[in-house]
Amino acid sequence: MKTTFFHMLALAQLMLVWTTALNAQAGIKYYFVAPTATITGTFGGAADNASCPVGYAKVEITAANSAQFLTVAPTRIRYVYEQLQPGRPLRTHVEKVMRISGSTIDINYYLIDDRNGLTTPGSTGIFLGITFSTANGYDGRKHVWPTGGSGGRVRLGEYQMERDQSHRAGGNAAIDELVLHESSHTQFTGPWSRWDGYITYGADEQHYGNELQGDPEAALNEGIGTFYGYLLNPTAITEMNNFFARADDRYFVEGQSVVAGRPELYNVSTRRRSSIGDVLVWRYTWLEIPGDYATYSERTPTAYFTYFWQNVNGNRDQALEMIISASNSMYDNRRKRFLSYASNRLAIKMEEFAATAAGQTARTNGTLTSSLFPYALLDLLTHFAMTETEYKADHDRNYPDRNPQAYTAYWSHRNAIKQLVQADLAASPIRFSDALRKIHDYCKTPANIVP
Image 1 (spheres, rainbow, N blue to C red):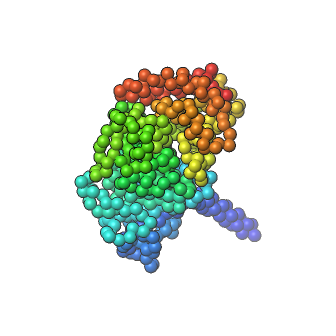
Image 2: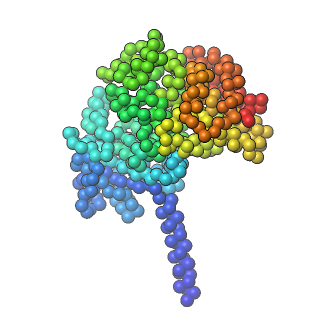
Image 3: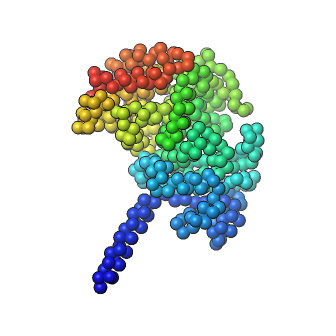
């Protein structure tokens, strides 16, 4: 019968829509974690306490129970869940972050209503519980600290998002930034540091943006995650720009850090003794940090990828694609997670684009950026502190499968670039934005385009 045929056709079309929607959701799941009574009272059934803090249970949020979830979800958890739905900017950017691994790693978001605190003492399950001190205006209880890891889990607590994250630069955009940052951690697999956290993060087991960590791999892991978060938080970028203009002792090394005893840092006679709580630290100005040690601060990779994204070829979408490609080249290998290796990968992508018809048009229009720029940008962020021998050694020990033409050409341009910005770097406040602009202008000059 014709009606049957058309009914079947309509059903097939509807199934196609459903399948497309399901595929769009593939790779991402959501779990609501709350006090056991909340879970059983709202969703019914036996409590699933596996991997949860003592007194808490979880339930997977699906299309069948999402309405129930939304009736009990607190403000920030509800915001995150809604912003992660297909078509929303946060979800779109999470899908870009998932391309770091070639979209091969699922993400499971664990959204925990921990407003009443975690039981102490007691197991916190898969969550990191920390005490929010009354001295800092909090309730003195243990709550969940946001984390993400290569197991595909992102754990976000209502208390931290409500009382801390939403008060940072950007407001709700700071929550978007947090989600993207932690999501990026799920896509970089294997060891995140050459040491464990006790050594890399030092005595307090914490990391800060202006801390020189135990190795640059850990700093890149954190810094690139913050860059992906900045894509939705422009206010935080402004704050970062202000940070790089500071000429004070804005960096520190923990006294018990693995790098504190390195001669290059130990022998800086002008470093200053200080403390954070009861932890001894040594403070440095940016210009006091020797060699490549600025790359041990997560602020440096954040700035590196942000300034690349903002400047290259006058096309942020294209620059982001290059950064995702560079991320993919090192997502499964800690030994590639260095800014010198990222410079290699980015310069190669820039040269590949320059060789296309679109690249030739950009050259004619004056929007093409020379592939010298990634190398010059790393030099700028380390205030040209590496010797040529040190820079080349740092680059070559990553064993890239090939080098861009810029790697050979850069050394004949390096001194001219350095002289161009020396006065800006020595100024107080540091004229970092001016130096960045001058270097990018240099790399847009036709005579300096490589290739």
